Image 1: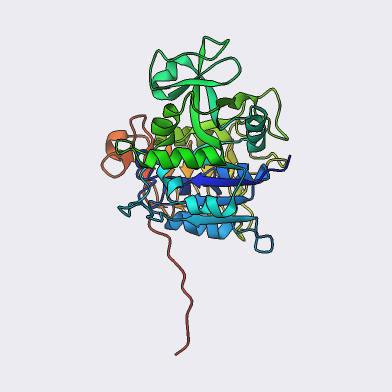
Image 2: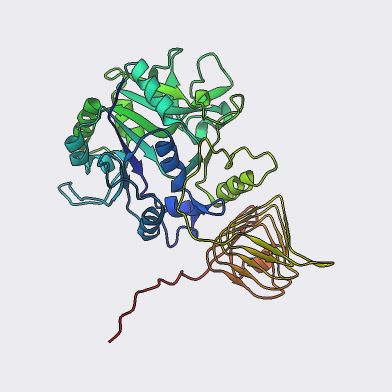
Length: 417
């Protein structure tokens, strides 16, 4: 069956819990895993699934995200049905407001749906770290003759209080929603787990348009799919839960559970970065059958210099991106972005370091997140005395030290006068 599929990526998240990483950028634009951005995961999932008609809805602090999309995600041109277009808030509501919720973001762009007339519309968030074959979810949607299909993540029932939980019968038909209730119903046939909504949806176009228009007439609505619209249409629309654990990624071990992480907090973001540098990582970045795509830069290879006692450039159980120079320093259990310079005598352990950072001679860093363009002075010691660290940096409750850097200079063209 040939289906016309239109994708909306909700990438306007403010990401307040990731502050200060979101001081200058939207959450989807936060760097991750050395060379990537969080938004690369959902975009790669779509493109790898054969979905090439994509609108990215942006809002808060969008310049960094726009630059990244321009650098790495411009395709099409010849084929007009293949595009990735960033869309700011259109302010099509009567009050000319910014996006007020997930459903309002779609409502403000109904013209994009109407003029393309897709068979199905997929609405996915841009702020999670995961791999997903979205084609399989669409196939499930069609097999069930569904109006709405919601991606559902099987989760230990002790976490029910932290999620929106889907109540479904043995066929997957959705019977109810339970917002952060400790006693929410468990999965059919599995009393130890609940279905947590992932906030990723497949809609048949007609029902989507109808639901959104009706919701706009409700003055009490916050115009959110999970909170307002979908609970109202139980029994009126055919809604099914798609079990994320049944999703198959080409090139991955079929016995391995799919990877998904909510990186909404600094601690969760840090731990997700630590996941990728493990010897047997839960998130495999080396699967050529399902590549994680991003912007491509003309970076030189990483370089490790010196082989003298007490001055040996080395990195162990770490991810090191292009352009890095480990010059007589030692790096363990860390993730280094592009063009990081580690000078002689440095000791870096369990750190996440963004692009263009310079770590001075003999500096010691432990459990730190360094934003772009950080300059660490010689002989600095950070991450060993949290009371001292708090005088200068942001420190999480678990003891992760976040260090701010300077803005990246913008190169301008020149003219001769």
